[in-house]
Image 1 (cartoon, rainbow, N blue to C red):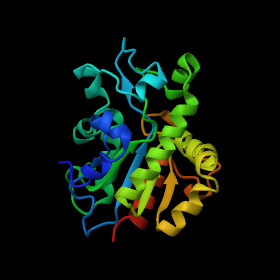
Image 2 (spheres, one colour):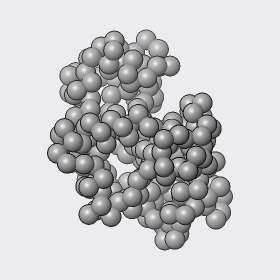
Image 3 (tube, rainbow, N blue to C red):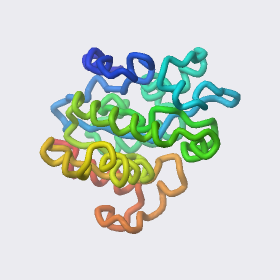
Length: 233
């Protein structure tokens, strides 16, 4: 079940007023005393083959007219409550390996996708930019929205479930639009974070090289290990 207690504050963000189906998912046990507050951050949604409503970035951030099917594809709460796809099921399995009791692991966390404009079906956000442009507005909208969501949800920790997103937010978007470094903002707010490779990619089960915190573990093992050590109270 989704916790709707934050909705009035999410709706103070202009993007969610025009795209309410994309409001962050907040599990009903997000604030449980068993664990700290954990936010999971994905990359982007996808729209079905043949959809074009998202191809023009400026129109997307206005008031786009989506079909019911298109809205379902980027309905944050619907996809997470249903553990949609390989991504949803894999994260649920990992959360339940860490939690002391089984159930729907998604109920214990909050989730949003960093990029607010969906990619085309079976491609990625980079392909969308290469084909139709809009990277600059996507990145600005993404980081500004992300910081606002952090201010509302006040997580103790979050995980970028995509090294691409971490690199974009940390290395480019935050410095460009806010100045300074992302981790310097997190410190005073008491937020820890890490990144992993995307759970739907082949890299999820490969050793993470070049990331000291992972100690050579696969993304899957690092994700579970870090949560066991830091998430549970």
